[in-house]
Each structure stands twice: as structure tokens, then as C-alpha cells.
Amino acid sequence: MSTPHIEAAPGDIAPSVLLPGDPLRARFLAHELLEAPRQVNARRNMLGFSGRWQGLPVTIMGGGMGIPSTAIYVTELVRSYGVRQIVRVGTCGGIGAVELGEVLLAQSASSDSRFNRLQFGGHDLAPCADFGLLRAAVEAAPAGAVAARVAHVFSTDCFYDGDPQLLQHLHRHHISGIEMEAAGLYGLAMREGFRALAILTVSDHLERDAHMPADEREQGLVRVARLALECVRRVVTT
Image (cartoon, rainbow, N blue to C red):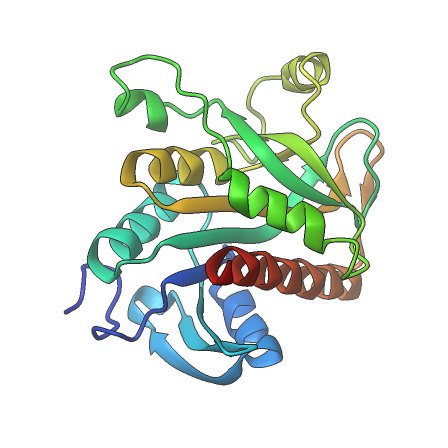
């Protein structure tokens, strides 16, 4: 069995998936965190690796940038490979009273994308995280010495330019981070019936012109991935 975008064989992909955007980050995290990782996908260079973490089967695979790319891989992972938990691990831009390196547990994801409206009859969907994964992440963060907060985020289609008044709107609605994938992931989770959560490190502050150095980004990504693995473990084994 394979799909147009994933070449993995049946059984190669675990029921629980960590989904960074960058396939090279997927490779780095797999070799950093998984026991005996093996590559299961290289189609279109979207690398994926499967292994175990504390005995739990896990796949770490890139999903690309933006909702359309993420949606392609998530749909195929769920429909063709039976994936039941997906945690997006990545970075975001911070807004308001957040600090560089802080971790946002995305409770909800607003968006300027039409992706969810196209599949919800033109109406507004309220894309939100799976409560079990979110609660597990909240409980696991202190044990992993992760400075995390539950927050609302915004998924944009425009990395550059876009609405010049966007930050004003986000402030007014107490949204703490901006990224490009969570709203699509959450919308798909609601439609397809799997668990989803986005865990994001604040790598840049959009109002302070502050940026996390490259080595700190890498360390932050590992912390976020460990937290994601632990919250998946708690949900799957309870």
C-alpha cells in the first residue's frame, strides 16, 4: 500500500505521529529521540521515520509548510495508514505577553484560510485541540521543565505581507501565536475523528524584533518533541 505522497508499506507507520514541517527536522528528531529509527518515507523528500519511545511505537514525519501541504499528508496518514494521534511540533511567532522560548499549547486555531470553510458548507468552524492530548501536555510540561501555557493561535496563509492590521485583531482577541498549519490540522481531526494537538515554541516575537538563535531553536524543538511524546504516551496508555 502507498499513496500519491507516502511510499510507506502497511505497518510501517505508527498510530501516533509527530509532525514537524521540515523533513530534515523529522530526521533530526527521530535520530535524537527514537529507539532504532528507520526511514519509512522519502517520496517527494518528505522524510518519515518510525521507531519506539519508551516502548511506544511512534512515527516522526515532515508535513511541509502551510495548511494545504499539511492537509495532504495528514489525510493520507489517517485514511490510508490508520493514524489516530497527530501532534504538530514546531515554532511560531509570538504576540503580546509571551517570551522567546516559551511553549504554546494551542487550544484553538483561528485562520485566514478558507480550508475549513470549504468543507463546512461555507460556515465558520471552531478548530480546537483534542482535550485529552491538551490536558496530558499541561500535566506533563512541569515534569519536563517546559515553560508552557495554553493559548490561542492563528494559522495564516501569508508568511509575508497579508493583512496589515492582523496583529491588532490578534491582540484584541487574546491570540498569542501565529503559524501556518494548526487550523487545518484541527479541522481535519474533527472531520476524520483522530486526536490532534499543536505544540509550538515561540521562536520570534513579532512586535519586539526578537529572534531565537539557531542553536536555541534546535534545543527548543527537542524539548517540544519530548513533551509531545510524553503526552501521546499518557493518552495511549491510560
